Amino acid sequence: MKQFGKIFKFELKYYLKNKIFVGITLFLVIVMGLVMFLPRIADAIGTGDGEVAIERPVLLVKPDVPENADVVKQIFTESFTDYEVQVTTDDDAVIKESILAEKAECAFVMSSPTSFKYYVNNLSLYDMNTEIATAVLQQIYQINAMIGGGMTPEQATDVMNISITSEVESLGKDQAENFFYTYIMIFALYMVILLYGQMVATNVATEKSSRAMELLVTSARPTAMMFGKVLSSCLAGFMQLVVIFGSSVLFYNINEEYWGDIMIINSIFNIPTELLVYMLIFFALGFLVYAFMFGAVGSTASKLEDINTSVMPVTLLFVAGFMVVIFSMSSGDIDNTLMTVCSYIPFTSPMAMFTRIAMSSVAWYEIAISIGILVASTVGIGALAAKIYRMGILLYGTPPKIGTILKLAFTKQ
Image 1: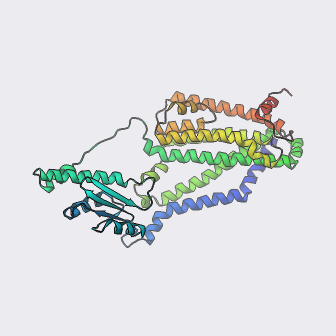
Image 2: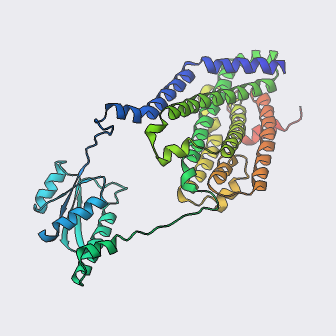
Image 3: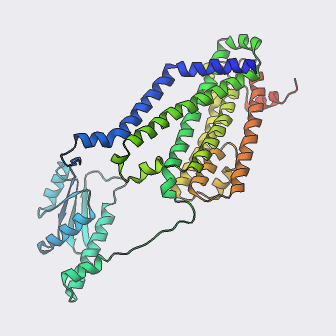
């Protein structure tokens, strides 16, 4: 235990004194500060009434007949709130020149009450203007049809603008509300595991290639060295996240009134306590599982140049689990068969089960089983990694294959 304590303190000091580690932490804190203070800054340099003056792009509309100009402009203005709608009577060639000259962003040229052409310079992947315009023309056509049937324009408008009230009661989880902080946790785990896992493997390989490992082995047990390196990196990563996210929460509370009712920001900084606890549990266990694996694999590399090749299987395993979770979140089907299976596999459960807990309804015993398997796997992988580490630091030459590593680990000494 004394040897572990010395190695743990030494490795932790290495991270805390590392200029890259400190620099990245300070940089991210500054970035989060700028983001959180952005509304306050915008308000300070904005217009006199406290609002920032935003120049909206121009949207040109050419009605099929001049008599519809007022109705077309009114309805298009109500539907395209992000644009400055302007009615035009210019030829198509002039309209195209205006778009190419960036005097207007896009244009709708109506050839009849039920057809139009949409002109835009670069068509965005997320451009939904044609769908909105189709709904607008349907509304105009229906209003004109009702007016032709004897209704007054006011009566037709009232019929088309009838207000429908609804109330949604979710008996489970609101995926839209929980999506953002779930995504942030998954992405943070992804970055921390790849960053610190690679650092653990690199440190081990560096000591081994410089022959410093041979001196360390004579004064400390390999198991103490292994756990000291992994747990110190875990604590360093946790401390970095606490500083970054803690400062973000502080900056948000200072500027909360300036953010208003923005759903994304409010959902991120109002995580339920229960989910926060689960986040910490799965985050810590998931990090340890992969840190042990990276440390063990790093011990088998004789040269620093071999690290990328050695850790590739572990990296691909983690990336595969990450992609399964991200695709499931994007599709909205959190409880699909693959996600359910991944919730109990220790290499993927830190991400998969937490995502299901945050965005779906999961029975308590399923959570308990997943955490139990993950805890047991963490202990087992840690013990196996220690054996591989003990054998790996004495191996030089071409990095052994995974089968050879496991065979050596289970060989009785």
